[in-house]
Amino acid sequence: MTLNRVMSLEEVVRSIRRKRCESQSLEVRVASQGTRKVYDSMSSFSNHNEGGIIVFGLDESLGFEVVGVHEAQELEKAVTA
Image (cartoon, rainbow, N blue to C red; front, top):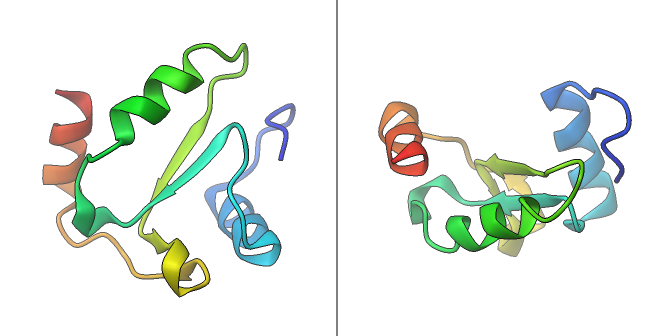
């Protein structure tokens, strides 16, 4: 997926679920796993001109099923810390 045009979150999630894969500029994380490996993704994205997107609340091991984010504020704090 290219980030050349602005996509809504719904479009991003639909694209991930349809393709059943991540891309060079798109990472999927189960929110319950916290910020493990997120910093590696953020570092990698910093080397791309267009950056990247990390989508929490999808489970790759379940075919990119939507599993939700239960502690969104805590997750946000951990990612931005």
